[in-house]
Amino acid sequence: MKTRRIGAIAAGAALALTLAACGSDSGGGSGSGGGDSKGLKIGIKFDQPGMGLKKGSDFTGMDVDVAKYVAKKLGTDEGNITWVQAPSAQRETLISTGQVDMIVATYSITDTRKEKVSFAGPYFIAGQDLLVRADDSSITGPDSLKGKKLCSVTGSTSAQNVLKKVPGVNLQEFGTYSECVAALASGSIDALTTDDTILAGYAAQEQYKGKLKVVGKPFSTENYGIGLKKGDTALCGKITDAIKSMISDGSWQKAVDSNLGPAGYKPGEGNPPTPAACS
Image 1 (cartoon, rainbow, N blue to C red):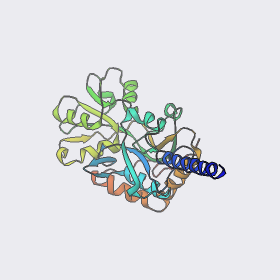
Image 2: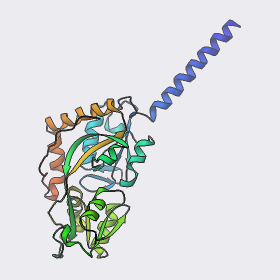
Image 3: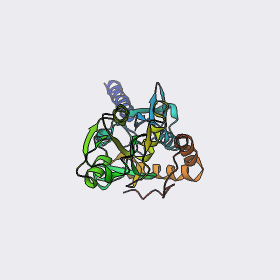
Image 4: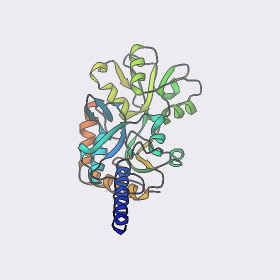
């Protein structure tokens, strides 16, 4: 009887350990500090050349390089990263439901978003601009958008910024920026607005070279941060340290040059940034 009872206790302990191990596979960003040999789930954009682009099984862009660097500092090799598509409108949900451990996806830090998620960063400062057809000289900035068909992405800060500046604009919101770019090239919309980093990446793509241009008059400041579960200050602190290290050891500049340099883009004022304290 005694032997049987000891065996039952041992079996229960083994089961508890097994369940704990299974649970850790889907975690990594909830007070644990994230990053282990079991991997990380990182949300990025799949359709933003120069920032986050999926081509076949390859992932490239500034955000991807930042994510890889941070993951490495957290103890996770590139091969143990699971890349998750993070459309603008779904980013907060992906974090709160644990579908990702963090998001590195041209994710502007705003007070509204900080009510739902925590941010480490910024790791880059961009500015909102306009992308138009190369032969269109009628659009020179947001003030010339009245009556024009403007495209942006659902859930992005870009659309709201323009609506405040130009109430008379005909705003059309699509699911992805690539849809907006295709519509712009075909002539069904007049302009696309989002961060200048993203616009420069599209303008530099082979199929759009010479057909599209960035207006070149930024009218906002976008602080890109790494989003993670609200209140996870332990993980936030580690990510902040990783960002500082990436900037100080030269890896940040290399990532900018390789990903945004080909588009002729040069980081604006404030870059490289100083990450803010975690909250």
